Image 1: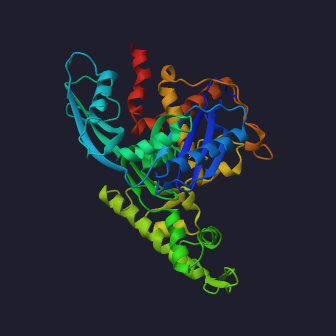
Image 2 (image 1 turned 180 degrees about the vertical axis):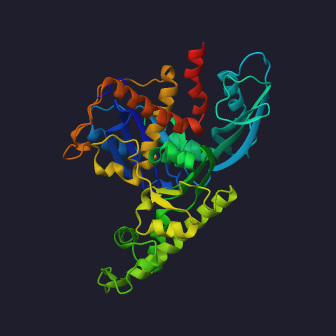
Image 3 (image 1 turned 30 degrees about the horizontal axis):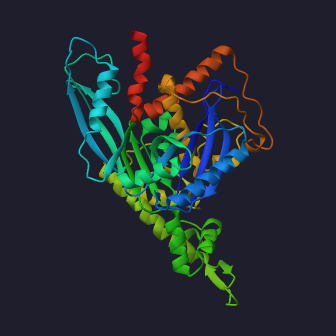
Length: 458
């Protein structure tokens, strides 16, 4: 166990659930989960915190459950995901003419270029959440991933700027801070989910992450290693449940149960002669519900969500098989039967389910490998990216906390293979590089990546 690494906590404040997961990287660069708690969410609608008091109660319950799973934990700072249909993104261009053209381009100049983008004009009432450099130019040279060390007069970049509603952001911050926690960073949920379910090869091949949550469906599109587009579609699993409730005249709890147990995203796949019997209320006769009708309702709403995905891909010119990595579906809604077939039919792209096991250490409980926790695990990875770029500024305490038994599989798998010291070092470097490249490609991590290089040249 590597006690030289900080414990980082992701807090996913969703429409249906709030999850708190604490993790730390082991010697192999994989995440070991050392605390896990969840609670039902009541104060959140469509990804936005509406009732702060209810949200605080749910956060505290998730934290209590996390402490119950591991009493040795101390949680102070958290990485929090943000979604909601108030999230927008825009592309901008920024350039600076350099003062001292005899010298090579430095990290400080790139930081200045990024900082200038925070002055971009955005509508009143909105606030910039993130500025993500895409590719740089130096004079007439384009598509430079890392301009530090180049010589030139003018350096510029294309940026992806993510904005959100000031009040919505304030509500999230207030709910977290009133739960006696400090928000280390707000991270766009599809970017967190992408980090959890994808490796570097997926980014290079081109891929669209579709995270189907309770209140929203989040989209992030990558092409040639660059974040090309983000969007939040204002429909999710709750909308499907409400459609079933209204369409079949049942209670919401019954609708949810039917969706999970008998639901399918393709009505052609549903048995025409299968029926679900629902007990009548207060002496009313029982209801017979056709599994085919249930699938029709689910397919209608899922098709609408996937039509939005297709629309966004067309907007950025990445439909028509341009994405060799296809579509990766994650989030709680990804567990619907036959969703892959429906997605492939509507978008014309290959699809697969994204599980957050890409960066998880072996031996974790099955529950954590579900797509529902992709965002939360991605938030921890985001924290690690920050830590690996800014070790000096990181205020986390290194404490000896073991993985508790209840978060391990019942029978532990065979030990990790015995590596020689050289192989172990290569494994560490490879894992660290993979994650660094991941966030570095589209986060201000692009800049932080250069720190080490600059240190060597000093």
